[in-house]
Structure formats: structure tokens, C-alpha cells
Length: 376
Image (cartoon, rainbow, N blue to C red; front, side, top):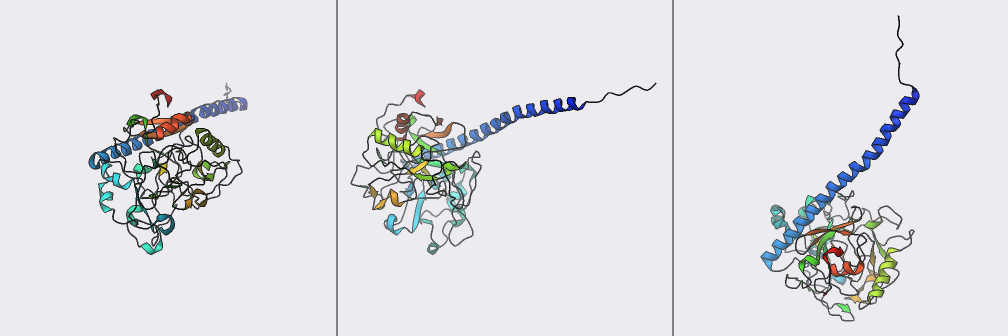
């Protein structure tokens, strides 16, 4: 006697497929979230290493590293022949990168023009894992070619604190330029600007209440034309339609931030390839290379400032880069905020929704702001 063998009906098969699809749909976001949590933890660890390196540098030298250390004897705003060494190379000796530190020639400015030869080009082209946040899916990028070579400068996702809002208190951070010919005349009209080097004693707001290093997505190669509606818009810099000159009130600064944050979606960026362009070099007037400031909140776009003041005749309206009076906030691919190392070596997650006054206060080393530990 033959017995009938029962198989799956088409409906049963479709039901099983649907159940599997639902399970995958539920599991995939969890897997992605776990991966991002691991990437964020790695970014946090690297920030911690850099912050501890700053502490070791301060212990050895009595000051924090300067944002830029140019050897150029001319006015860089009009006679630029090179960029200064940034705040990152002096820290390599404290981050298990002694061979790279030893290979650097600190007696020359960073090569950016074809007439300068090839000084430091091999080291300058290195992509260092320490400076690469894995959450940034654009790393590494060939943003600027090294003259006289087939190499490109190595990028950085980590940027030093330039200070609170420039229109209220320029150069008030912890990693700022030392006085040199580029910055010595200050803003026109003259304002009381305090230059580096910065000591622990000068951080009168407290090292646990003062930012030191944060994150930024690097720029996009070929300087693309981005709009505010582009998925990669945070990599670009825009121009705020509302100026905020030095000496502005908090209300004027808030208006600037609001105008920057509400630029029309179709508006094209001014620049798109300079964020994190190189870890080896810096220029005192250009924040987005490897600096950030506490002006606009985290994960807001960077904006230049159409202010009347100028630094040695170089106004922000003539620069595509964000200058000392502009807004260069940190940004990242982390959900809801950015990691930030403080001047005491601790690392915190700063929400994009942080209160503006709290954010400004955390940017200044000696502003006298009272910031509660539960405010961020």
C-alpha cells in the first residue's frame, strides 16, 4: 500500500519566508547598532590616548601644544609659503609613535607649494590609525596632494579646541595658536586676544569643565559641490547670512547660529574638502583643518562669518575656510552627538541638543561660567 508524502504548500512556504524576513529586519538594526557601539568605543579610546598624550606633553614642557607652530617669518595671510606644524606631531612621542616622531623635521614648515621641496613628505602622507575614527566611512581620503610627489597628506578625525564663540571670546580654548606675525596684530579694531601657549594654571574654569579635543568628519575629495540636503553635508562649510562681529551680544551670536543652522536645503557649500585635510600641518586662521570651536552645537554645519573685523587684513568673507570668528563645530556619525575629551583627560559624549550656553562655557578656559556636571 502506497502512502502519500505530504510536502509544504506554497502558502506555508511564503509564511516561513515572511517570518524569516521579519526576524532579519529585527536583527539587522541590532547588529548595526552593536557594530557602531564598537566603533564609537574605539573612537573614545583614541580620544583618550590623545588627551593623555597632551597631559604628558604638558608635564614635559609646562604648556599644552600650540594649534600651529609656524617658522615662517613673513605674514602668512599675504606671503604664505607653508603651514606650521600642527598640535598633533609633538604628541606622537607619547602615543607609541616614536619612530614617526623621530622621522619628522620640526625645523621646517609643512610643504604646500611646489617650490618648497619634499620635506617631511613621507611622514606627512601616513594614515595613522590613532587619528582615524572608524565610524567615519570616508576615511582615508586623498584631499590634498603633497607637492613634488605622488603622495597625499594623511587625514585626521580629531580636532583641538580653539575656544568659545569667536565674536564673544576668540582664542579662548586650550589648543590655540601661539603669538606670531600672522596673529600678532589681532582683530581690527584691536581686541584683547590671549594667545598660547596655554598652561594648566591658565584654565581657571577647571580642567574638568573645559574641552580639549573632539571629532570631525573629514572632507570629501575633489571639493564637491554640496547642498544642505546632501547626505554628506556635514563635511562642507557654508556662509552664514547673518554676521556676528567681535563684541556681539549673546542674542546676536544666537541669531548667527540659528541662521547658520537653517540655511536653505538647496544652498551650495563654499568649501568641501578641507575638514581634516592633514594631521601634520595647521594655519592659525583656518579652523576646519584640525581645530573646532564651541560656537554652533555639535553636528551643526560649519559657517564662515561675514564680520567687519579682519586678521591682518584677511576678512572671513575673503576666506572659504572658517576663521576665528566663524563656527566650526565638531561632528560625527555617532547617533545624537560627538565624543569630546576634556582638559583633565576624561572623555564625554556631548549631545547635539546640548544647551548653547553650556556648550559655549565648556569651550572657554577662563570665561568664569558655572557649568554643572549634569548639564552635558
